[in-house]
Figure 1 (cartoon, rainbow, N blue to C red):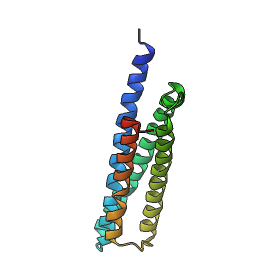
Figure 2 (figure 1 turned 180 degrees about the vertical axis):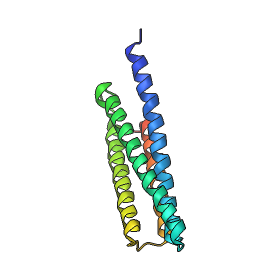
Figure 3 (figure 1 turned 60 degrees about the horizontal axis):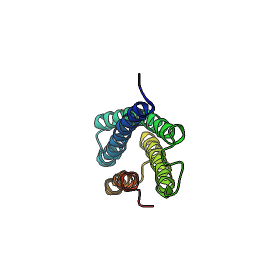
Amino acid sequence: MGTFSDGLLWVKALHIVFIASWFAGLFYLPRIFVNLAMEDNEVARARLLLMARKLNRFTLMLSVLAVLLGLLLWLGYGLGLRGPGNGWMHAKLTLVILVLGYQHACGSLLKKFERGANTRSHKWYRWFNEVPVLMLLAITILVVVKPF
């Protein structure tokens, strides 16, 4: 028979897998935008838009699963909820909200590409693509090091 800690470990493992998968999508979607911003060929552009739409939908599903499992760890198992020294959790949750905002921005940018209304250069998208890397780095440090 499983114990409380066995369930906790399963939820943690799944949470980590869905976070990694979610961020893989957030790393790749703006790379598609880089290519879309440089592409003039309509056939190639249509293929890139199809890839971006599918990736955006899949990434959204992964984010929902990651957030739900995170909420289960936080509210269901009490990780980072009780006791002193949980300021790291507040900072992490703030960053998670920013990641969700970034994902929303990706969806808005995709809609602009679909309408042919993109005004940004491929160089801008290259810099935009670095944002989730920095957020994942900060979140990982907060969760592992728990600096405050």
